[in-house]
Amino acid sequence: ISSLWKHISKWGRFADMSIVKKDIERIASYGLPWDKLDGKTVAVTGATGFIGSFIIKALLQRVKDYGEDISIVAFVRNEQRAKEKFRDYEDLGRIEYIEQDICESVTSPVRADYVIHCASNAAPDMYMKDPVGTMRINFLGTDNMLRFAARSGAKKFLYVSTIEVYGKTSCDEITEDDFGYISSGNVRSCYPESKKCCENLTICFGKQYGLNVSVGRLSYIYGAGMSK
Image 1 (cartoon, rainbow, N blue to C red):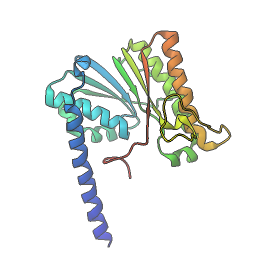
Image 2 (cartoon, helix red, strand yellow):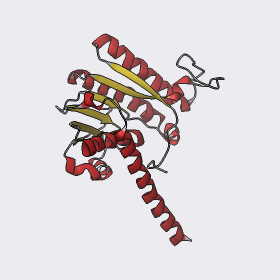
Image 3 (spheres, one colour):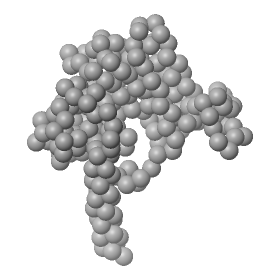
Image 4 (cartoon, rainbow, N blue to C red):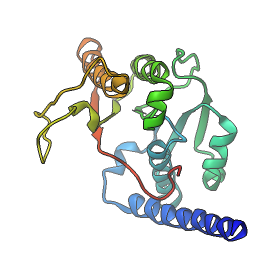
């Protein structure tokens, strides 16, 4: 049974990677305004996470298949793990790794034209195990990346938020005008409360410092390639 499970698990990983590869190729083939990224540098935080890694792979696939002139700055906690994650694109020479805790100020002289801020604890079990850390990553990380974007003279800053900012609603369909209850007395609220606060920080930063910002509230994301 143990040997069979190892075989099934190994096959599952290969199947996952095959699906991911096809997904990435399909994304890169979309008729998006890719020309806006020509000659530009895109910085991505949470680069080895599920969402961040898909974004980076799609951009690098665009370089590989269509010859786009796009460079990537990947903010990671572990450079070796990141290099393994993106090993299929190593020969392109288009990705630079910045290994640091985003709760600390960005001291690297690197610059970016676009900043996509994905870094966050995104697993519910982590909210309960490390609620303070969850809030610190959101609060401090977002502030540091907004300042990095402003210092870079970035054309755009995208904050990756969550559907959880809507709280408990009675709606079958949620619009941007629908907001429910989030209990600030509940430890589990560390995630939606801090994400909601960072949305406002992003908007305020844009208003006060003239940074072009957007917020994307993602729903529950899952699929091939994610950590089981």
